[in-house]
Image (tube, rainbow, N blue to C red; front, side, top):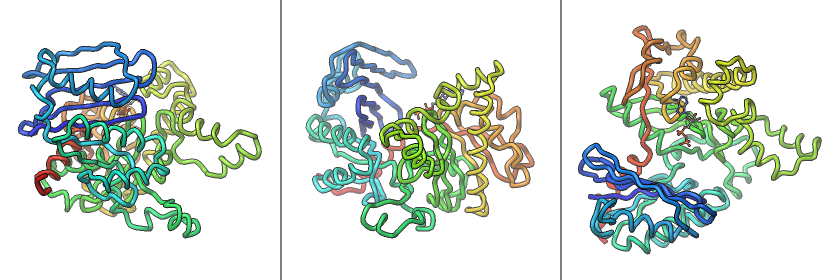
Length: 405
Ligand code: ADP
């Protein structure tokens, strides 16, 4: 079985073609700057451990053209991995917002498309390009099953006390204002990998999973199900991120609007695109901040302190929520690669059952790695995330149980 995974963003399409027998990636790539000047395609072919890459500038005025270029590359005699697009059995689409409508991976039909479209007000930047990717894929791969995997779906198991806000009921009943949570595909994937690694059924595992990338969120998982998460109605709250503020007092927004005179759009842009590490210390890339910190830059030191303090606060909160925890998991760019962040986020938590081994934490991480010390009752694991593989696995599981076309 061959499954194409597509992540269609506003100006980019990322793709990976999986051979599900081996769970190996056959080809992968990315089209960037769709609809802009200097659009670019990068395509990689994997062959027995070897990787061949082509990159070129090419005009890509819209998503349809982008996906046609991808389809041509998949079957290209030199760079492709299949001989005909009909060999793609299914296309798994990343869809950011599934609202309350979608609590699981879903086979796409006309009704599902309508439901995703109805959710656009909740995710105005993400759901439109996700939808476009689906509609174009239906044209280009007409014989393939199309499947939607939602970032929000994993968190639909949260109880009301975790997902409701203490605002008038009509905010929720009429306008859908509640916690949805995001990065669900990654949290679910690392939770499953942690269960496999620790040799215990996922349904019996309590976990705290910290996805620390450009966007960052942390999730409390009880018996394999999400029961709380740090992002909310939008991907803005919670942890300090590359450019997003994470938690702030909402009254800051009123003050900056009414007291200082900023427009709502300006405040929106600042909180989403100019805050976090970038706002505090001038770069959204943690590597730059670590370097500046080593050079003695006080802004960088403060940014790192805020970043790790916020993670620690959430770990403490979720230890209280869960009562008993089997493992804390770090994943994504920062979680997988920064001993500094992991160390300081866990510093002082030994009395709560979390205690790292300095050497293990600092060693180069390859695959799933334990970084706790022998006294730590709670395992601390670094698990490389793989959202594309999770989408492919979810897609495979669904089409195997779905009725034939
Ligand atoms: P995205 O959310 O865009 O998928 P990633 O998961 O790739 O993001 O994470 C990006 C972040 O990971 C950046 O802040 C980057 O600095 C950080 N990162 C990547 N490699 C390292 C490293 N070796 N050390 C510290 N941080 C790293």
